[in-house]
Length: 338
Image (cartoon, rainbow, N blue to C red; front, side, top):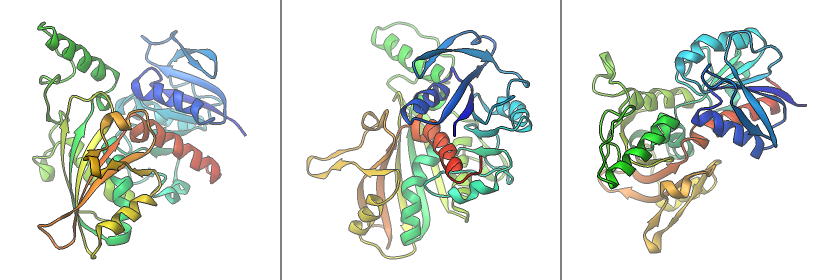
């Protein structure tokens, strides 16, 4: 069986990655419709050897569509996803719009595919930094019981979209050439610099955390289906794509580092990537364009009884967004819930 697929935000960084991955994974596409804003309408993008014209996104353009991959921003999803569902499509949403809606499953297929059967037309893809963290954290938690997790992220420009990637490139080129540069996306110099994530600061009970950090904490609890003690510090670093994360996990139960390596060796979507003898560990360059999340540098935290440190790197555009969305659709096809 094949499906009519639409991509909202088709010309953006995640949208173009979805188009590419649909072809790479031989997804059963009967017809592909590319939807974007009026300024992108009429552009032609290639899929499966043919050029497909981009259509302007409108409420009446979902007729006959089976699956919608939405990656045009939260406000766009909020406006147009209900129209897609009303037309009979399933929406797999890559924005923050529906993630914490109790009626919407929040899914990483390697962790909680069983909740897909409860969907009511919309399924949410978690934040990129959350996905990259939970892939190694979940199997370790299941084996040893994570009492508390401290995560620091080193996030690439790709998390801000194609415009952010262009700005990093152009600013870096200007700095190398000694030229003036006017930033439009980021509030501070990004080339040859880093700064705490530019997501808006949260108020009330999350005072002091920004939205990116809060997403990692609350989304993980929803995915795991239980309260999780997670605290996050998110940082923008001048990397084009692929996020890095440092995890410090305190477990309920004793473990050995060798046991932790074995757990991660068996974890779906995770690859141990390191050369300990050469002191070489996974980098964003290693992870860019790759599907698995790369882990390594496991070692005991000697300040607590059952503490583990590890290093994690994952491609933000692939497993952090586009790939996870397509895997959700693939799982729904297998489970006959689409």
